[in-house]
Amino acid sequence: MSWQDKNVLITGISGFAGSYLAEELLRKGANVYGLIRKRADGSKPKNLVDRGIVDKVRLIEGDLTDITSLANALDESEPNVIFHLAAQSFVPRSFTHPIETFEINTIGTANLLEAVRLKDYDPVIVFAGSSEEYGLVISSEKQYERVKQKYGVIFPEPTEIPELPIKETNPLRPMSPYAVSKVHGEYIMRNYYHAYGMKTIVSRGFNHEGAGRGLMFVTSVVTNQVMKLKFEETDKIVIGNVNAFRDWSHVMDIVNGYILLAEKGKSGEIYNQGSMRTNSVMSYILLSLEQAGWEIKKIKTMKNNKVVENPTEIDTSKMFDVRFEKTKIDKMLLEDEIEFTLEDKGVWVYTDKGKIPVVFDPRRFRPAEVPILLSDTTKIQRLGFEIRYKLKDIIRDQLNYFLNPFNRKLL
Image (cartoon, rainbow, N blue to C red):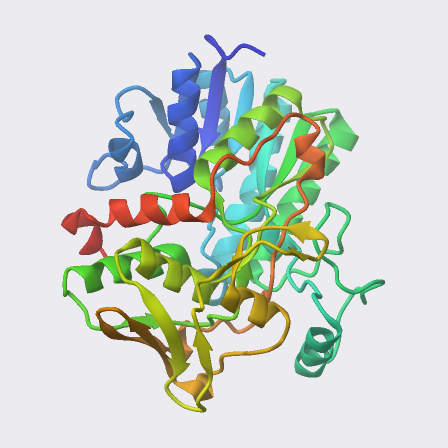
């Protein structure tokens, strides 16, 4: 498929992934339109300014909760392809603002599809679902017993343990209002394919990161604080649950996946997009410190005397039948050799330049946590998808972004 002179409408164009996607589609010769909310101060979206494309895309004011504005946006853009990325995507906010999250993510998605149907357009529509839809994934018998005790009920019950890597057929156990809204949005997309023959394709994207990632997301929380340490603007790192494991991709791998799905994806289908590796928040902190210039010797909890020597030592052995790069601390966490708790208070990171405190903040813990995500991307790989970036590439890009003091001071 050639993108030359194709009309593309991106909802959420001013967001993190949307701006990267717009830049790549412009490079391919597409006419890029973007739906944005009206800004009272008339300012230009920072992500589009950062990408240097704010004057190259055609911005259309609209709101997912207003179907009339969506109809107007369709008439203006006459899209061959729609990438539906717009969402209230910050998981912690979804716990405090669930109705807002459902209105934007669920009703907004229904409004977009209804507008397309009623206006009789026929675009390919790629929906940005989320790995958060999988939610409570069971990684071991010990973890199963732990979460069973915590939640009482697990539905559906696992048919085999571990449930990793996560295939598109894995059970959905969403653990946040955001995740529930994405499940609902995805089902609406699939229903419009079955009921009306619309060309909808669902991407279940695992976490994607890079320069410009929102400051409330954990990878930016980490790398921002690391650069503040570098410039002596803080004397510690404050964080929530460091045991959580995520499948972190570079945003450009995800963007290339979106484009591939629009070109070759099958309507009505679901495709995982991820890196096929899983790493802990603790590793993200330690590797970020390393990339910023510290040599890490060991870590030790502030209470309870848990010690790990050479915690960033790289291990490439198979886990869950997948070979991927992980740290020594990752492997220990995955094999239940260690766990960090609020009672530990935090961790001292021993480096060649002294000790760095990593303090656990109970306010940063979610009411219900997703313990681990690890994608199986075999399905999209059959279309030609390749993972091009490593975890260290993501960290370097984020650290470089926070070299700019203006970006650091935003937090």
